[in-house]
Length: 302
Image (cartoon, rainbow, N blue to C red; front, side):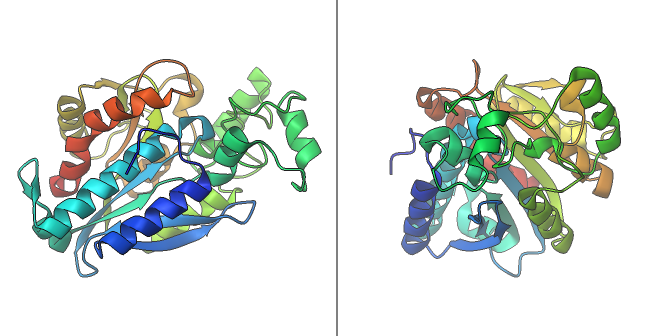
Protein backbone atom coordinates (compact mmCIF):
# COMPACT_ATOMS: atom_id res chain seq x y z
CA UNK A 1 0.00 0.00 0.00
CA UNK A 2 1.04 3.58 -0.57
CA UNK A 3 1.39 5.39 2.75
CA UNK A 4 3.40 8.34 1.42
CA UNK A 5 0.26 10.43 1.05
CA UNK A 6 -2.23 12.26 3.25
CA UNK A 7 -5.26 10.20 4.26
CA UNK A 8 -8.68 11.73 4.66
CA UNK A 9 -11.21 9.95 6.86
CA UNK A 10 -12.75 7.85 4.09
CA UNK A 11 -9.37 6.67 2.77
CA UNK A 12 -8.24 5.80 6.29
CA UNK A 13 -11.32 3.64 6.92
CA UNK A 14 -10.85 1.87 3.59
CA UNK A 15 -7.21 1.15 4.39
CA UNK A 16 -8.04 -0.16 7.87
CA UNK A 17 -10.70 -2.46 6.42
CA UNK A 18 -8.19 -3.81 3.89
CA UNK A 19 -5.60 -4.42 6.62
CA UNK A 20 -8.12 -6.22 8.85
CA UNK A 21 -9.13 -8.45 5.93
CA UNK A 22 -5.49 -9.18 5.15
CA UNK A 23 -4.53 -10.20 8.70
CA UNK A 24 -6.55 -11.30 11.70
CA UNK A 25 -3.94 -9.56 13.86
CA UNK A 26 -5.76 -6.30 13.09
CA UNK A 27 -8.99 -5.82 15.03
CA UNK A 28 -11.14 -2.74 14.47
CA UNK A 29 -13.54 -1.23 17.00
CA UNK A 30 -14.58 2.32 17.88
CA UNK A 31 -14.18 4.48 20.98
CA UNK A 32 -17.02 6.87 20.14
CA UNK A 33 -18.02 9.51 17.62
CA UNK A 34 -16.71 12.92 16.65
CA UNK A 35 -18.89 16.03 16.79
CA UNK A 36 -19.93 15.43 13.18
CA UNK A 37 -20.84 11.82 14.08
CA UNK A 38 -17.83 10.17 12.48
CA UNK A 39 -16.92 6.96 14.35
CA UNK A 40 -13.37 7.12 15.74
CA UNK A 41 -11.56 3.85 15.00
CA UNK A 42 -9.53 1.94 17.56
CA UNK A 43 -7.11 -0.67 16.25
CA UNK A 44 -6.01 -3.46 18.56
CA UNK A 45 -2.88 -5.46 17.79
CA UNK A 46 -2.41 -8.22 20.31
CA UNK A 47 -4.12 -11.15 21.95
CA UNK A 48 -7.17 -10.45 24.11
CA UNK A 49 -5.48 -12.31 26.95
CA UNK A 50 -2.34 -10.18 26.94
CA UNK A 51 -1.80 -8.75 30.42
CA UNK A 52 -0.07 -5.49 29.46
CA UNK A 53 -0.82 -2.88 26.86
CA UNK A 54 0.28 0.44 25.43
CA UNK A 55 -1.56 3.11 23.48
CA UNK A 56 -0.55 5.10 20.40
CA UNK A 57 -2.63 8.18 19.52
CA UNK A 58 -2.26 10.08 16.26
CA UNK A 59 -3.69 13.28 14.78
CA UNK A 60 -5.13 15.31 17.62
CA UNK A 61 -4.46 18.19 15.23
CA UNK A 62 -5.86 18.34 11.71
CA UNK A 63 -2.67 19.83 10.29
CA UNK A 64 -0.63 16.89 11.62
CA UNK A 65 -2.26 14.04 9.75
CA UNK A 66 1.02 12.85 8.23
CA UNK A 67 1.16 11.02 11.57
CA UNK A 68 -1.90 9.03 10.50
CA UNK A 69 0.00 7.93 7.40
CA UNK A 70 2.96 6.84 9.53
CA UNK A 71 0.84 4.87 11.99
CA UNK A 72 -1.01 3.12 9.15
CA UNK A 73 2.38 2.09 7.75
CA UNK A 74 3.21 0.62 11.16
CA UNK A 75 -0.04 -1.35 11.28
CA UNK A 76 0.69 -2.79 7.83
CA UNK A 77 4.25 -3.76 8.72
CA UNK A 78 3.10 -5.38 11.97
CA UNK A 79 0.31 -7.32 10.24
CA UNK A 80 2.68 -8.48 7.48
CA UNK A 81 5.25 -9.74 9.99
CA UNK A 82 2.53 -11.45 12.06
CA UNK A 83 1.11 -13.23 9.02
CA UNK A 84 4.52 -14.45 7.89
CA UNK A 85 5.82 -15.30 11.38
CA UNK A 86 8.59 -12.80 11.01
CA UNK A 87 10.76 -10.60 13.20
CA UNK A 88 11.22 -6.84 13.21
CA UNK A 89 14.25 -5.37 15.00
CA UNK A 90 14.81 -8.84 16.42
CA UNK A 91 11.33 -8.93 17.96
CA UNK A 92 9.27 -12.00 17.13
CA UNK A 93 5.92 -10.48 16.20
CA UNK A 94 3.89 -13.60 16.98
CA UNK A 95 5.35 -13.61 20.50
CA UNK A 96 4.75 -9.88 20.85
CA UNK A 97 1.14 -10.44 19.79
CA UNK A 98 0.65 -12.98 22.58
CA UNK A 99 2.33 -10.90 25.29
CA UNK A 100 1.28 -7.30 24.61
CA UNK A 101 -1.70 -5.40 23.27
CA UNK A 102 -1.04 -2.27 21.23
CA UNK A 103 -4.06 0.02 21.08
CA UNK A 104 -3.96 2.57 18.26
CA UNK A 105 -6.10 5.62 17.51
CA UNK A 106 -4.99 6.47 13.94
CA UNK A 107 -7.04 9.70 13.69
CA UNK A 108 -8.56 11.24 16.81
CA UNK A 109 -9.72 14.35 14.94
CA UNK A 110 -11.50 13.15 11.78
CA UNK A 111 -13.68 16.26 11.44
CA UNK A 112 -10.72 18.63 11.50
CA UNK A 113 -8.88 16.52 8.91
CA UNK A 114 -11.94 16.61 6.66
CA UNK A 115 -12.15 20.40 6.99
CA UNK A 116 -8.49 20.77 6.08
CA UNK A 117 -8.36 18.33 3.16
CA UNK A 118 -11.86 18.59 1.73
CA UNK A 119 -13.23 21.91 2.98
CA UNK A 120 -16.36 22.58 4.98
CA UNK A 121 -19.49 21.15 3.40
CA UNK A 122 -22.55 23.19 2.52
CA UNK A 123 -24.64 20.94 4.74
CA UNK A 124 -22.51 21.63 7.85
CA UNK A 125 -24.99 22.92 10.48
CA UNK A 126 -22.42 25.32 11.99
CA UNK A 127 -20.79 26.37 8.71
CA UNK A 128 -21.12 30.14 9.23
CA UNK A 129 -19.80 29.95 12.78
CA UNK A 130 -16.80 27.84 11.78
CA UNK A 131 -15.92 30.13 8.87
CA UNK A 132 -16.00 33.02 11.36
CA UNK A 133 -13.65 31.02 13.61
CA UNK A 134 -11.40 30.67 10.56
CA UNK A 135 -11.11 34.42 10.15
CA UNK A 136 -13.93 34.55 7.63
CA UNK A 137 -12.02 32.37 5.17
CA UNK A 138 -13.11 29.24 3.31
CA UNK A 139 -9.46 28.15 3.16
CA UNK A 140 -9.04 25.50 5.86
CA UNK A 141 -5.60 24.33 4.72
CA UNK A 142 -4.04 25.34 8.07
CA UNK A 143 -6.96 24.26 10.30
CA UNK A 144 -5.80 22.41 13.42
CA UNK A 145 -8.85 22.19 15.68
CA UNK A 146 -11.91 19.93 15.72
CA UNK A 147 -15.27 20.65 14.06
CA UNK A 148 -16.16 23.55 16.37
CA UNK A 149 -12.82 25.23 16.83
CA UNK A 150 -11.46 23.44 19.91
CA UNK A 151 -7.84 22.31 20.07
CA UNK A 152 -8.19 18.72 21.27
CA UNK A 153 -4.75 18.61 22.86
CA UNK A 154 -5.72 21.42 25.24
CA UNK A 155 -9.09 19.87 26.17
CA UNK A 156 -7.95 17.34 28.79
CA UNK A 157 -8.41 17.84 32.52
CA UNK A 158 -4.82 18.78 33.30
CA UNK A 159 -4.14 22.34 34.51
CA UNK A 160 -7.23 23.36 32.55
CA UNK A 161 -8.19 26.31 34.74
CA UNK A 162 -4.63 27.63 34.67
CA UNK A 163 -4.72 27.51 30.87
CA UNK A 164 -7.98 29.47 30.86
CA UNK A 165 -6.04 32.32 32.45
CA UNK A 166 -3.45 32.03 29.68
CA UNK A 167 -6.23 32.21 27.09
CA UNK A 168 -7.57 35.39 28.64
CA UNK A 169 -4.14 37.02 28.66
CA UNK A 170 -3.35 36.04 25.08
CA UNK A 171 -6.82 36.57 23.63
CA UNK A 172 -7.23 32.94 22.55
CA UNK A 173 -10.74 31.95 21.49
CA UNK A 174 -12.38 29.28 19.34
CA UNK A 175 -10.57 28.98 16.04
CA UNK A 176 -7.87 27.15 14.13
CA UNK A 177 -5.84 26.17 17.20
CA UNK A 178 -5.00 26.60 20.92
CA UNK A 179 -8.56 27.12 22.27
CA UNK A 180 -9.24 24.60 25.05
CA UNK A 181 -13.04 24.48 24.99
CA UNK A 182 -15.63 25.39 27.60
CA UNK A 183 -14.81 22.56 30.00
CA UNK A 184 -12.31 19.69 30.31
CA UNK A 185 -13.25 16.89 27.93
CA UNK A 186 -16.12 18.96 26.56
CA UNK A 187 -15.28 17.53 23.14
CA UNK A 188 -16.57 14.02 22.40
CA UNK A 189 -13.26 13.01 20.83
CA UNK A 190 -11.33 13.63 24.07
CA UNK A 191 -14.14 12.41 26.31
CA UNK A 192 -14.31 9.11 24.40
CA UNK A 193 -10.55 8.62 24.63
CA UNK A 194 -10.49 9.41 28.35
CA UNK A 195 -13.29 6.92 28.99
CA UNK A 196 -11.46 4.27 26.98
CA UNK A 197 -8.23 4.78 28.94
CA UNK A 198 -10.02 4.70 32.30
CA UNK A 199 -11.82 1.49 31.32
CA UNK A 200 -8.54 -0.14 30.20
CA UNK A 201 -6.50 0.38 33.34
CA UNK A 202 -3.82 -2.06 32.12
CA UNK A 203 -2.40 0.62 29.77
CA UNK A 204 1.17 1.09 30.98
CA UNK A 205 2.35 3.82 28.64
CA UNK A 206 1.22 6.17 25.89
CA UNK A 207 2.87 7.61 22.81
CA UNK A 208 1.13 10.59 21.21
CA UNK A 209 2.30 11.53 17.73
CA UNK A 210 2.42 15.18 16.67
CA UNK A 211 4.44 17.34 14.28
CA UNK A 212 6.95 19.10 14.15
CA UNK A 213 10.38 19.68 15.74
CA UNK A 214 11.83 16.18 16.21
CA UNK A 215 11.44 16.47 19.98
CA UNK A 216 10.22 14.23 22.81
CA UNK A 217 8.27 15.50 25.81
CA UNK A 218 7.94 13.24 28.83
CA UNK A 219 7.32 15.56 31.80
CA UNK A 220 4.26 17.50 32.93
CA UNK A 221 4.87 20.69 34.90
CA UNK A 222 8.28 19.30 35.81
CA UNK A 223 6.91 15.97 37.08
CA UNK A 224 7.92 12.69 35.50
CA UNK A 225 6.63 9.23 36.48
CA UNK A 226 9.04 6.52 37.53
CA UNK A 227 11.20 5.21 34.64
CA UNK A 228 9.98 7.96 32.27
CA UNK A 229 13.40 9.48 31.76
CA UNK A 230 14.95 6.06 31.14
CA UNK A 231 12.34 5.25 28.49
CA UNK A 232 12.56 8.75 27.03
CA UNK A 233 16.29 8.25 26.47
CA UNK A 234 15.57 4.98 24.65
CA UNK A 235 13.02 6.78 22.45
CA UNK A 236 15.59 9.49 21.77
CA UNK A 237 18.25 6.97 20.81
CA UNK A 238 15.92 5.05 18.50
CA UNK A 239 14.38 8.07 16.79
CA UNK A 240 17.28 10.49 16.82
CA UNK A 241 14.94 13.09 18.35
CA UNK A 242 16.00 15.25 21.31
CA UNK A 243 14.47 15.39 24.79
CA UNK A 244 12.67 18.65 25.62
CA UNK A 245 10.40 20.24 28.20
CA UNK A 246 7.16 21.93 27.20
CA UNK A 247 6.97 25.69 27.52
CA UNK A 248 4.25 28.31 27.22
CA UNK A 249 0.85 27.21 25.92
CA UNK A 250 2.20 23.71 25.19
CA UNK A 251 2.40 23.06 28.96
CA UNK A 252 -1.34 22.72 29.56
CA UNK A 253 -4.20 20.37 28.87
CA UNK A 254 -2.52 17.74 26.69
CA UNK A 255 -3.01 13.98 26.71
CA UNK A 256 0.50 13.47 28.10
CA UNK A 257 -0.25 15.93 30.93
CA UNK A 258 -3.54 14.24 31.76
CA UNK A 259 -2.22 10.67 31.73
CA UNK A 260 0.73 11.59 33.96
CA UNK A 261 -1.51 13.57 36.32
CA UNK A 262 -4.24 10.93 36.46
CA UNK A 263 -2.19 7.71 36.59
CA UNK A 264 1.43 8.74 37.24
CA UNK A 265 2.49 6.47 34.38
CA UNK A 266 4.88 7.23 31.51
CA UNK A 267 3.49 9.18 28.58
CA UNK A 268 5.43 10.67 25.67
CA UNK A 269 4.60 13.32 23.12
CA UNK A 270 6.73 12.81 20.02
CA UNK A 271 6.97 15.77 17.65
CA UNK A 272 7.83 14.25 14.26
CA UNK A 273 9.54 15.88 11.31
CA UNK A 274 10.68 19.45 10.80
CA UNK A 275 9.30 22.50 9.06
CA UNK A 276 5.99 24.35 9.16
CA UNK A 277 2.70 22.52 9.70
CA UNK A 278 1.15 20.99 7.77
CA UNK A 279 4.29 19.08 6.82
CA UNK A 280 4.42 17.85 3.21
CA UNK A 281 3.69 14.22 2.44
CA UNK A 282 7.27 13.93 1.18
CA UNK A 283 8.33 13.71 4.85
CA UNK A 284 6.16 10.70 5.70
CA UNK A 285 8.75 8.09 4.75
CA UNK A 286 11.44 9.76 6.85
CA UNK A 287 9.04 10.17 9.77
CA UNK A 288 8.08 6.50 9.73
CA UNK A 289 11.71 5.46 9.34
CA UNK A 290 12.49 7.43 12.52
CA UNK A 291 9.53 5.94 14.42
CA UNK A 292 9.69 2.28 13.33
CA UNK A 293 12.01 0.91 15.98
CA UNK A 294 10.31 2.56 18.94
CA UNK A 295 6.79 1.67 17.75
CA UNK A 296 7.78 -2.01 17.71
CA UNK A 297 9.91 -1.81 20.89
CA UNK A 298 7.81 0.41 23.16
CA UNK A 299 5.40 -2.38 24.29
CA UNK A 300 8.24 -4.52 25.69
CA UNK A 301 9.70 -1.69 27.77
CA UNK A 302 7.03 -2.33 30.43
